[in-house]
Image (cartoon, rainbow, N blue to C red; front, side, top):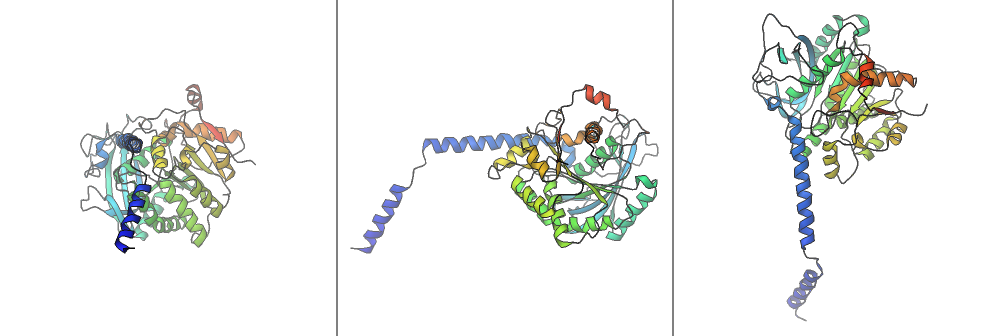
Length: 405
């Protein structure tokens, strides 16, 4: 038989066996694409204010009379440096850790959970978050010295560090302003430290951000080692969204390498709306082992951002929207379900920003179970510390699942 004829016959049979692209196929594909489009649009709405992308976000307001409350934030960054000093850091990655210090002022009319962005920078300190000072620190030693200076200005019981790691689609400005808001609303009395990584700040660059967290792991372990070498009494670690993947990978890596010799200072880990594959999280926790103090996980079942993440990640549940609280608690975690809290963002992914309102209630609920919650210490001498009764009257539907004792 002619070989060409045989090959043609074989290819014809293969073509006949291949299922055609039917109308049903195209309908399903279109429905999937429309679904993704709607979810990406909802995620884009998280941004809210375009000023979070402004290249002028760190223009300094040097008015002598400042009616606001100032918070100095120390920064360890795996982001690319910006060419403009009014930006400090841009979207994108760096292959080394750099450092900065930013002092932000929160206005007297501030509403809990909000960031009062200026319409135009540097803004009005009576009405907006404004930058009082923003500068690079030229070395790790300078970063460490700046932390020691801040700690020394506080009484001994307040010489603590609160480390925050932001999530996906987050600009440097948004991460810094958000940490100032959290520190202010909780009345935190220690030193806030921002760990920032190379998020592009673009809704459509999810995979870029995901890989950026992996690139930032070594830098995070290096930063945790540096912080552990300071005179701080306690170090609290809090992360949001994809930043929780970075934090968990950093803890796992530090555990395997043994680089952080004494971990007793790290008294609490809080992961909010973690965008982590639940199977990966289980593997991480098995490697790390049950922590002496359970990790705290903030979850919500209606998180649109995590719904999208699940869709584009093979349908595997994300930890921040996982429905089996008992299973997570058995790994060594306290699960705090905040689904019933009202959400400020359409994607319902940012409820952690209201920690100033619900954290005291969570602390009290845990205390009733005999669990002492380390972490955000509330300053009872100012009006930012909120009594529990109004929160209870508001009917906050917080559900807590804790490990069996």
